[in-house]
Length: 243
Image (cartoon, rainbow, N blue to C red; front, side, top):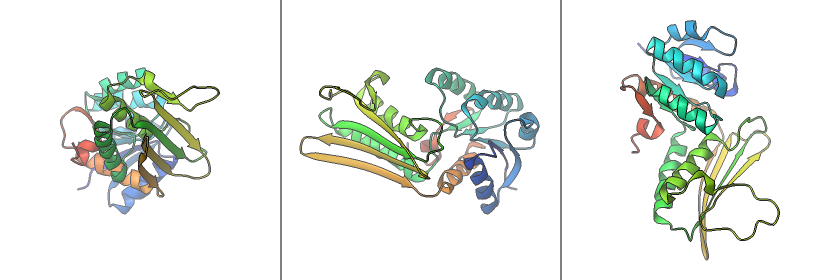
C-alpha cells in the first residue's frame, strides 16, 4: 500500500501541484492542510509530511513530527540563517529531507557547481543569477542560496563574501567576492545560472524549469525514500545517490 502523505501548505502553488502530482503517481494524500487547519490531526492521518508552507510554520510542523514520530520533507524556503540552524537541529530528531530544490536536474547542477568551484581558482569570478515569477516572496531563492553555499564551501569563504547586487561606485571586483542577483517578473517557474568568468573565457551552468511539477515529483520521491531512513537531516543529493 502506498504511503499516506500530508501536504502542508496545500493552498499554495506548490501545495496544489503536489496534490495533483500525488494523484498522478498513485500516491495517497492522507491530509492536505494550510494555515488555520488542524495540523496535528492531519499529521496523524499520514505516514510522512511534505512541507511547502511558509517559514514561520516550519517549527510547529517539526515539533508535531517529533511528537508523532513522523518523517518529514521540507521544501519551504526563506528562513533566516539563525532560525534555519535551530530548525535543522530539530529536524535531525526525525528522518528529514530538507532541500531548497527537489528537481533532479537542479541537484545535478549542485554537483556540477561543486566540481567547477573546486577546479576553477579564484581567478574565475563566481556569480549566481536567478529569476522567478513576480509572486515569489523570498530572495535569493532557496536554490540560489544552496548554490552560493556550495561555492563558499569550496572556496573556503564566509557569507561576508556575498555581494547582493551592485549599486553606485563599487570599485573593482575583488577576487574573493561572490555575486548574487535575484530577478523577478512574469510567471517564470525558476531559472538559475552559475557563472565562472576569467580573463579570456567564461563557464556558465544553467538550469531552467518550465513546469512546477518537476519539484513536486522530486519532493514526493523524497517522501517515499525518507520513510526507510534513520533520524537525521538529508538532502536530494542523498535521495538521488549523488554523494
